[in-house]
Image 1 (cartoon, rainbow, N blue to C red):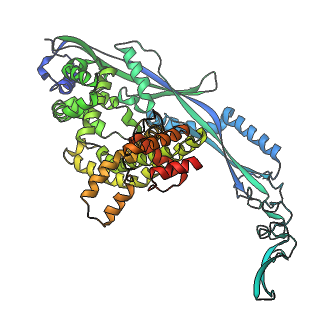
Image 2 (tube, rainbow, N blue to C red):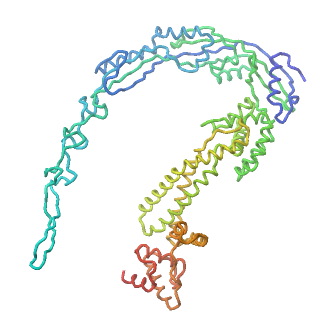
Image 3 (tube, rainbow, N blue to C red):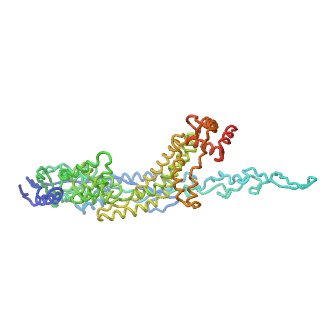
Amino acid sequence: MEAPRTGQGSALLQNLRLLFGGNNIQPSDITPTGEAAESYLATASVVWRFDHEITETTSKGNAAVAGRHFDYRAADFQAHLQRLCAEARTNRDIRGPFMQQVDLAGSDALAWSSEAKVAHDFGSYSVFRQCGSCRGSGRVSCSGCGGGGRRTCTSCGGAGSHNHHETHTRWNGRHNESYTQVVRRSCVSCGGGGRVVCTSCGGSGRQTCGACSGHGFFTDTAQVRSLAKPHWHVPTHSGLASDALVRALKWRGPSRSRELVPFKLAGTAYDDHDQWVARYEGLAEVVKLELLVVKAPYVVAAVGSNVIPIITPAIFDQLLQPELKQVLRLASGRGSERKFRRLAKNLFSHFRSLPVLDRALQGVAKQKGGARSEPEVAVANAAHGFISSDAAKALGSACQAVLDKVSPANSRMAWTLIGLPVAVASFALTANEFNRLHGASLWGIAFALGTLAALSVVAMLSVSPAGWVLSAITSALMRLRVPKEYRQRGRNWAPLKGACLAAGSASVIGAAYGGASAAQWVPSIKEAVAPVLTYAMTHLEPGSAAYRYVAQGRQPEPLPIAPASDTETYREIQRHLIGHGYLRGAIDGALGPQTRAAIARYERDRRLAQSMSPQELLTYMGQH
């Protein structure tokens, strides 16, 4: 074992032992085998390119502006803006204050050199523009009367009069008799003219222009500024780990480059493209260690007094090999989500025992919004870059799955309890309705399905506040089981989209079931739930509200079983039902479930009493 010869190398070794120690190895398992150190001049520059920016606003009528006003001279206004834009790009005199600010700030200017800065503000300029809708008058033709000032009377429909029924009494020689006579009377509302004064415009035929609010013109205001846009440039270097240093400087940008190299302002000047360049120089102190980590060789390089690593091999891929194998095994194959849920508590306890995975769990738990789609970022930050992207992605997904179980952001079970009645009701209602749509057109079926699916989604939205409240309470209580640093932020509205989709899908499935029951492939929804309703009625008190409600949904008693003498009657009934599309199958004269369901649909469509005898039903069929 070769001990580091420099203080920078010793600090790097100590940091690596602190980072890797406890993650399935001991700090003593990390042994240095070689060291190299070098200090060389590092350079970088911020290239400031100047461009123009125009911010335009429009106000109705006259707007007060501090700059120059061009009245209605739009051509002069545009020419003036073009001249200012050219100055913003090319005039070096207006850049003076900004350039002086960069010079005075020195190396501190790097902190704000990652975004565009205002080099010069030319102020605001305005011009009037006539309203095209009213052509500058501020008034337009009334939409209610078309500009005529009068519109058709709604009482008489424009006829000027309407029929009036008068009742009179007369003596017919034996007694008084009443009779009704229709007379034509003038309309009281319009006085017989058929048109009335338009209430929208008061009879003028004109109303205030909505586009310009009656002003007749707009004020267009433009603010012109010269912007200095920075571009970070790091040239190629020569020295120890120079390629890695250049990559690190480019990735960090000017605002974080001083963490690696103590840059100082070396000078400013214009280049051949009229771009102002601020050059920075600093001494890069680079150290490179050759290590054995559990007998595997690695090379790590760092820079600066804080020994920030710039060469980071995927050492954690080796150290976390058992965890990676377990995670990949659980994530592969069928039922991977159930596997994670079953082993979530054990994985959570094991991950917390490893420092890097413990930090990753805390990082994933604190991710917000769109960052949740990239849990590997939290893992890479916890590993300080010493991990491959594939391993970080696998471990990040595992950390997210574990946290969703032990520290859930919402309760899907709560949403299921709230949404299940809506989905069941949507299924039953749609199935019952589609069972009645016998012989409907394709457009009618599509319209009914769309309407019922939309009603299902609306119903789910109406109960969604209850789902949110129940989910928030349930998930908050579940998160109390873990320490505060592992608790995810609540996202109790997240399951709403799935709940709405489930309600809509229940309607679609119900429509398919209703169509199948109409074709007599499956029993109708009322027939299917009849045993349940019958069982419920036997346990309810007769006469109670619940009993009456269940009795309403119960399938009516079927027709009595036909005796042998009525077999021919039922054959004729079946023949008529098959001929009119209510029944499919053979004519056997038996009063089975399909025949009873077909008779019930026929009676419902014809609005017949369900107490009709078979002979009365057959007589009606023969007459109609």
